Image: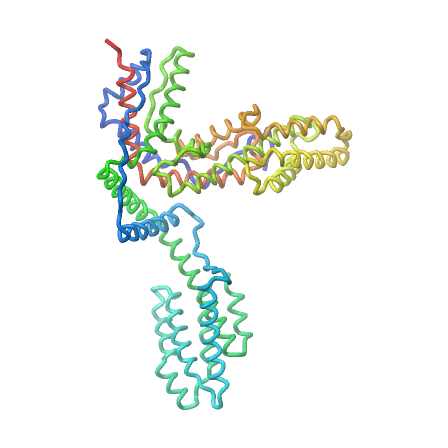
Length: 516
């Protein structure tokens, strides 16, 4: 990766926010009248009157009681919607094996029952002659599980399995002492080898090494469980576009039901969402007013898309004391995680910027050292809460000074002196503050970069913000996840956002009207 001036390109897997939704959001202003839209530009030159408290009156929220049946029904609906949402927004969503606590009552009962079954099976085949009644039951279960991992078009294979694992025929063989359990187990293993993913090849091959019926069938069922999970994950990936569309429509309908019920109870179901959008609207309005006064030129009019994008950007710098908007609650954990990641990437970039500025030309442009320092910083700060950052920064400074001390003489530079180390330590300790000039500068660059990503589609790779080339991969992952989340959120709640922002824009137009 080129290091020139720290200006690299980021080729994101997703091009910006859907232009269809953005255009539709902006064009929705037409419903307020095209002349009013034009008036905003004209009236911006007027001196704004004092801002009103809010265009959204907040009604009182009386208590509302529900029955246990209603609660259970609502809980089930939320779980279904939550699962559909999880699949839709998480590109890496996979079903994983359920791991129960070995000490839990449920796990203990399960282990006892399984042990009892396998013990009885072992005793029956130890009889003289062996009793294979349990094997008949197991083969029937294996047949059913094999059918769950066969694709719909594999009709011939399904017919073949039905023919070979014919339970009536197998029962007759048992009654006539012509039953060979390993003939059927080997056939099952051959079928599993054809159907399993490469990830399971080793486990299926291991089955051929087992020569005792009980351990063999235990392992067969364990591998079949994994194969069923693989098939479920394969199916999810194949129908993901359909699931995403269905999930959007499902969530939209469910949220509309929620809003309706809240209204019937005299509650504003979008109260936090309105406050969230209004904060962004006010921020952009104040910025436009300041620019207008400074430049004495008409500022560009606000658009619904610009207000919503500004609101989305607030999520990466969210005040944890505030309640999340109702339309974002299901993704609150994801957005908070992204906020933490962007904050940490900003800190890493700030530390490296301070380090390279302080040490100077001796390490300028040395990407290998920068990669080494980044790795060391990330290891030290891994899992560290923001409240404990100040205490950890001394460890970061010590490690960076150690690496620089080792680098300098190895590459023909004079020793990294004690005074220089002390100066760098002080700089690193201070840069963890969000009010530090370097941190603020780096954070501003990152915000502008992400804003550019979510504001429009891009046909060419985007240029990395200065100072972030060393965390290009991590930043790309964060931006991709953020873009997927807000694109999905915009698709679901577009109509609500449009109504709220249009109300704000109309209110702004009235607020700027000349006073008689």
